[in-house]
Image 1 (tube, rainbow, N blue to C red):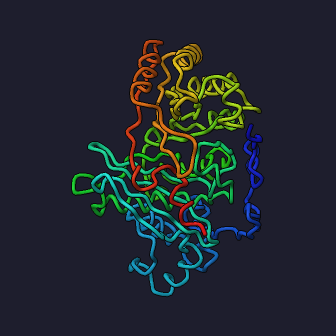
Image 2 (image 1 turned 180 degrees about the vertical axis):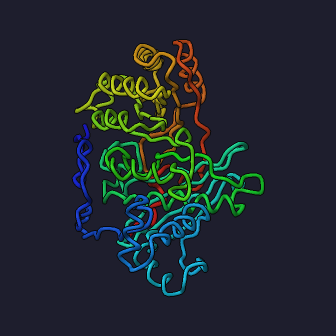
Length: 388
């Protein structure tokens, strides 16, 4: 059995605090804290920051309009600012935090996966996906992950560090600019959805993820102006953080990565279950649904001969219906195997039977549209192949 990892060393899940100035990656590499960025700051803090530079407060609003409304990140393009102001705000408020090192496409150009390198060398990924009616970006909240789920490519590499609020937001701003500029074709020009389902456990980087949601959803020029209902935050089941999120007053969708309805198997598939078992996870999800009125998404990676048995489908439907009633949707995910892994996707007939049984149990159930298999689409794969 995999040893449980309940709380990443860099930040407890229940009591988020500031990032340490220096942290250690699993390999022992010293990591420096990301530089301060405009997207780390709320409106008042931006005005205070430009005042520190000897600039008038209205320059903060100008910078915000450039970054959040015009999706510009290079001060050199902000010609309505004096040259001296551009020189000052560049390193102080608009440093480059992430550099794309690889961009790969598939699905006829409607899926684009970007590998980013942060200034301290850590690698993170985001995936931009175009559908007929929407453009969605899947983003990372941590470099690596400390949850140690054995079938997950990111979990196999361990946790390096939390991403800053601005590093999270920058993945979305870049995706929004790409969509606007026709990166997904002429018919999609606006990014509509954001899912925190990339590398990392979002609720283990709680404060920065919540701050990032505000930057994504606050009205321009304070933020990007996305709808909170178009943002999904996933978790493997950090129960205290789910309760805390319920009290934030947000309308984001909560996605619970359950992967099996029984504690015996989940203790090994999702080791944090040894601290917060299935019943507690469902109870926390129920409270989130009650407080927000939002439907809970249950994520379930279907793994051949591991969690795809008919009785597990029946139990999943029973628990989901009992705890969440109509406020639940099961999202089955055909496993995208990682190189050298013993884990594989369930056969199509097994998947179809699983779906049928969940639906017969009175719970809505669909199969996720798989994207990016030929470009190492499982989160963590591209970063893993780039590491020495």
